[in-house]
Image 1 (cartoon, helix red, strand yellow):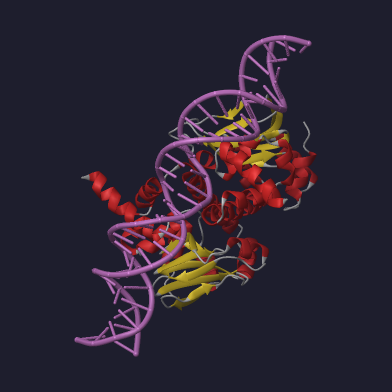
Image 2 (tube, each protein chain N blue to C red):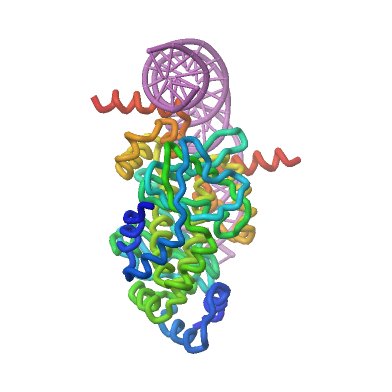
Length: 195
Length: 195
DNA sequence: GGTAAAAGTTAATGTAGGATAAGAAATAAA
DNA sequence: TTTATTTCTTATCCTACATTAACTTTTACC
């Protein structure tokens, strides 16, 4: 089980002793998902916080008309969950799917809660990453209210330069909030504009 | 200084001794804002978490074309801040303004940080309310990607029934993401549809 | 390496919601 | 109570993006 990445990303925010690290690692379950395999499906209760050590996941919803909307991507080093369902333990609306073969570390809700009591520093760690996540969703909401699709795409490229090359365009379109057809036309238009 | 509301809302999530409550309250600064007065302006550094004990605030951005977009409302019992600016201590893009005469309790960033060390339970409290806030922004983002303006308005009415009566329609329009003109037309259309 | 499936493109037509303008109604300040 | 300001409405025209459909290219996997 490769845990150096998760430990590094945690100790960027809090300090842990060797024993604490060891204890934390003992709570994690490694798992591998194949391309297109679902980590979580709409209607299920989310039982885990999922940390990606390899590959990439996507969280998305399906609307009344069957169209998919991407809430988030989780590339290497990111956490993902259906936060609503994880917190309330009620059925969620999120689907989480592997975009390619993906290795994760699972932290169950009950173990996460116990962790807060055993090592209170983790309360701080999850507070901090939740705060950062909140800020980025607020910014994205403002972007969706203020900007054109073209501007939102430019922001996406600026914020996640590595993802543009790896993700199918279809998925980026579903993230910025346009149809694949319009996305295609938009890119054509942007190229023309630059020349 | 009326602190029973803030103490109640905190002790719904964590337990505090009488001394801890007293200590917490000693960190708060009461303040009153007049209608249209700004709590924070774009470009400033956000120094406080603000808790509303009376009245109502709004957080909004102004886009390139001068249009306002409402990120959030803070009625009685809610916290508000420019989270990006508060966390990074860099100039923010949010304006926070009083919609009516409003009483608040201010908790400065430095005192909040010290509070985490003095009473670690507060780390948990702010983790929990940040998680809840995150969930609602995620849901709102999905709504903006999936639903029509009419459906978003219905959701707003369902989620914040008390606010519909008190807020100017203009502000609700800027929250759900339409112009006041279209909002007006939309309401007319909805009435017709119901009969 | 072949083939089915998925992803991407292009074009024509349609629509939710924006822009502009101008007046009516409500509210606040004096 | 009056006046000024803000909010709300209605109507017309306009645009960013959606829909549909048909086609091409790329990718996965047997």
